[in-house]
Image (cartoon, rainbow, N blue to C red; front, side, top):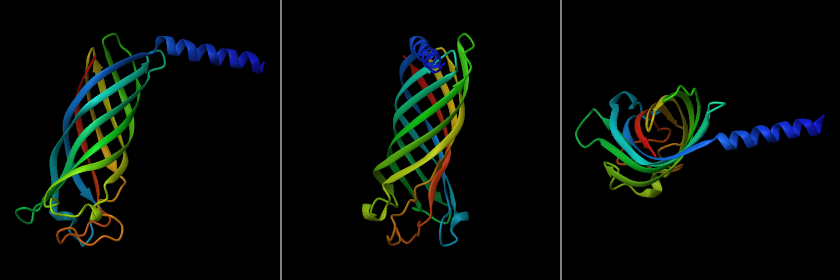
Length: 198
């Protein structure tokens, strides 16, 4: 019985691999980021800031069972803006590796899906009020997850998801960054993307 089960599982894996489809693509879109868990009672003064992202995507999907994996390499700019005065905004540029785990339904030329997206990021640039800050004070590594939905229409993919950052913006034990304390601050926000798949 055990051998028969192994043979059946093997056949299913091989048949899934045989019917699997893969595509490369280019991706771009907008981020609408904000800060949460800000210290020093400044949470209400920080507004959302619009950023952007672009990069490469690879989609591997098995149509029969509706599961798809889409790893990506993205350049992502995100930050926030303080409403209390001028020059009180910042942005960080990240190289981000999300893995979009998709569960969809193939309907001829369209495929709606929902997705769960764990990711890791590494900061490669900083600007505005963070420009003079020391990298030792900023936590360059970030990680988190996103939840969203999308649709494939032939070679076009449109997705929307909300990302929750779990990494703190300020390095442990670091002093204030330009007078602001970001000990527990984390970036989060909505991401809207369009991809062209080949």
